[in-house]
Image 1 (cartoon, helix red, strand yellow):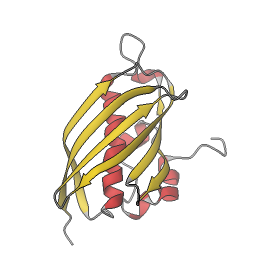
Image 2: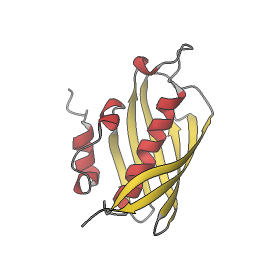
Image 3: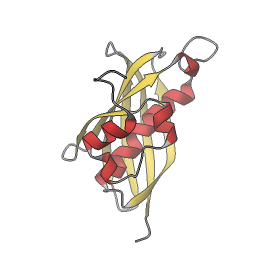
Length: 149
């Protein structure tokens, strides 16, 4: 591993996610999740993913479910960070619009909270390729269940 490559756990530490979650979930590790930036004031999170050829569909593009997972795995952690890990985060609705096929390489996802209520959060995210082309947009409704004290 090069000095500039960080694991999901290392990047979670760097942006403060590890204060709320013990370790990155296996899905985040599989997707090559790396936290890049978090702003509590702007309610935004930026994450990088590593798309691999193993994620390809029969047409040589990253399968839509994987793209959806990348969007979801940015919006959920953002809500978790904003609520300081006090809630179990559950996506109840995920709408994805696919705009361009994704190929292997680094993909970047930027998410923001549109509204954060007592029991529900509404979020949106965009996924970009390394050249900055918009690949997909996602909208999510996230249920917030208080964790036991």
